[in-house]
Amino acid sequence: MPLVSEARYRVRVLSSYIISDDDLAYAHMGRRNRWVNGFVSSLVRNRSGLREFDLQFHRTPADRAGVEALVEQWRREGVDLAICPGTDSALRLAEANDGLPMIYFGAHPENNGLELLDREEIVGVRLNLPLIWSHADNFALLRQIMPRLKRLYFALNMASEFAFPNVRVVYRTFRASGTGFWIPGDHPCLGYRSVAFLAEREGLQYYEGPYNHADELVAGLEQADLEDAALVGFNDTVLNQAATDRLLEFSDRRGVPLVWVNNPSVIERYGVADFSSDFEGVGRIVGTLALSILRDGISPGQLGLQADPGVRRTLNLARAQALGFGPYPEDLLARFHTVVR
Image (cartoon, one colour):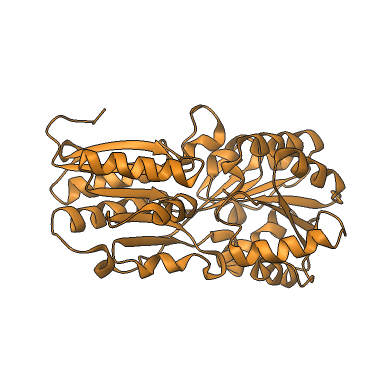
């Protein structure tokens, strides 16, 4: 149902991160994310408000046919604008969209997926994946909060749009060789070389593990050398709820530090550290873009790709201490915007 009866603008939010159980830590990326707060504040600051918006949330359908059916429903409803939190939903909607103005915010690791911006009806806010965007400000903190760290393991969900076509090819090539689950950082079939470079700079071994389902992920985790290791999670994992549950359970049961990117609520319950964009700031940009399109009549393509407004770091101090890390100096703790004690 629309939030108000006097709405002027019909807006639909499509996200792969909307999960029916809002109590799950990783479900907060959907309806309860801080971008909504920033969006509303931006509307108010620009002499508008939710009273003018018929704003409804939809979980991204599992297949293209479902997305096409949803787009057709929106056309019948006279929807004016779609907002996509996350690159996964943005890419899926773009395949089925035929002109509906669209705002998205999402990451483009190693520039994959930026072809979205070739479309005149699409404008985006590029999220930086802060952990791997800056060495000095973010990535180097890993060794400071986990001094014993020697290895990083990142498992990628092959069903997500973050398994871009070029990445899928090299992953399939590696799997065909039959040489195990984890791809070493110096292997030619590595998907994300930039992360390996950051790890090498810190003297860490880096591994990627593509998986298709939760059981495959857990089998791969069991093959990892977990001594002085950490797991790195991105939100591609959240698109497979079973895999996310198993990953969190594995980290907790085996006492393996977990680091996440762009989902602080996961770390507040389960992990050691999260490196996120400033989602409230993102929401403010999205609100301004929405009014530019809906009220001022500006084409999305004229608005240009927007920059990530900043970073928010979270440290779960209690979890870090339980894993034998710390104590930390106050100047290190001050680097984090939120410290869970």
